[in-house]
Length: 257
Image (cartoon, rainbow, N blue to C red; front, top):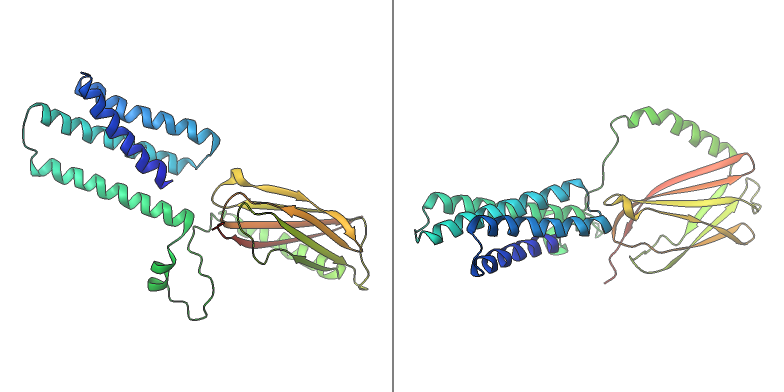
């Protein structure tokens, strides 16, 4: 995200000064310097949707940059020195761009370890995750009672469900996930339909759904490949006859360094 934000600013400046050298008026040079980077970003967003908030921030930054370039170009054309007032406005928008870029970078990628270690002490030496955890539905409490009923039904089944392969997962690296399924008598359960849904909290376009194949006595496997790092929510759904089993958990995917 920061690459497209600052890359668009550099492109806007290049387009403005190039257009002025080619004889284009200050007004139209400013229009082109704001419109072309944003149109290019819209085409980019059709393939890699970043979210409406990120799109709006890019639009505001590109528009503000074009306006500042037009003010600068107009004063340069009149050969006037810039008053401290416009300088203050320019400084404000530059600071605003830097702040927005920093907040978005923290929300999507988290704080750098060196900074997190200063402001977020971790006495247990565990991994600290500082990325945006996602939204919680306003009416989530309405779903709590059915959730308790589901837990009670699963407890009565007595199934033993273990999932292997979630220990260390890196983005863009294949990983085998294994589910071992046994009944209340510790006997393997054959012929179950097992699916695993994965939701990425930062970008729903990356969501995945896997189907498992039975490869042994009560053992089911599937190949997992996630496109990006960050916080994911997994939902394991098992159906065998008229019985079903649901298990949700949070998963953090590390970057492929």
